[in-house]
Image 1 (cartoon, rainbow, N blue to C red):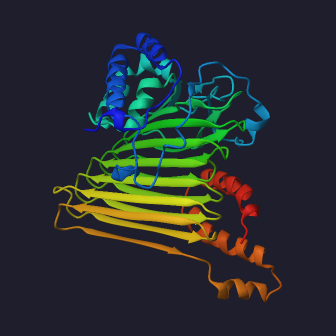
Image 2: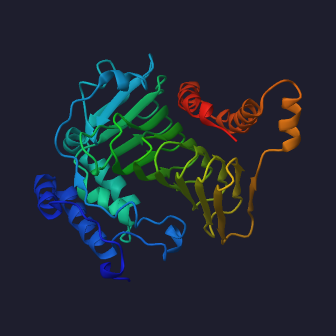
Image 3: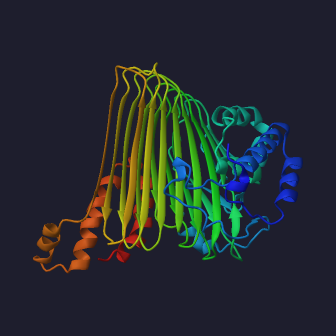
Length: 439
């Protein structure tokens, strides 16, 4: 393994002292995890483009600075927060990775639902938290997952009881508010959905200020046997920020997951979405959309690990690139020998509006079962001039014509989201983006 001297160093002011303080304050199981994670990250360092997984996403420029961990409480402009909150939803608010009970609306939760800060949950649900973490954390845990484990201070724990049906959307807002640049935050979320339960959950990562910062987010979800979960992760942070996130999902048999990943804000976004199908007959939909321009960079890495028979997976990502935006899509499907009768489909489409826009896309299929159906495809293209001309011939100017055609491209994937509250929020976020689309 490469030594840290050959990798990019991470410069965080007062890091050693901060780590020891967190370890001392942690329960026994988390204390051990933190120590192991510190060792793993110290050995691994920040990944470089020499690694296949980071080949198209260089980090040297974004981490060529001194950072500090956000530890001091900051004042929050609640009016900026209300923009993201809709009536009827269950609001959970974290500021700089710390659960904020005052800004959250958790007074009257439906029966079968509990939402706690990590500190509270560590006392009541430590066994479940430790078990899920152990299941999802191999010894070679990736650098940013290890870093989050080592340095997160708080987070949110969501638990849906067996057979519970939660009607309102659970909207978790990870807000970052900085009074100076180069802060690093560590959002942390854990969700456990019991057997035959149903819930819709959305995580939104938003900025309340314009200061540049780095976010290293980690979410773990366990979906019980027969449960149905609608899940969306939306990134809409400010134009100078860096967003690196890992979402790890464990699905039991006959469960259904409909997930959607959305990105359009940060200067650099890296989304790692890993789904483990750990039971027969599990069904997974993992769709996504991004819209970027200028010098923005979005990297979506997905991994489907299918370990049991009769599972179905459907994956569809779309991207809209303007200016000199750069997108990366890497979708890996791993079918174990036991996973006979697997039906897996993967497709990604990219629309280039900017002359300097660029896409790197790569499917990875590793199939070790002989009775499966696995297909994939990818397209990269531009708008049809015939279609643009047709609209212009109907007295629609060129800019408006491009916007209409781009919106049609986007609506095709946004409309796959079955949860109406989630779809409404995504359209609201995109309504800000589309007036900027030009050609």
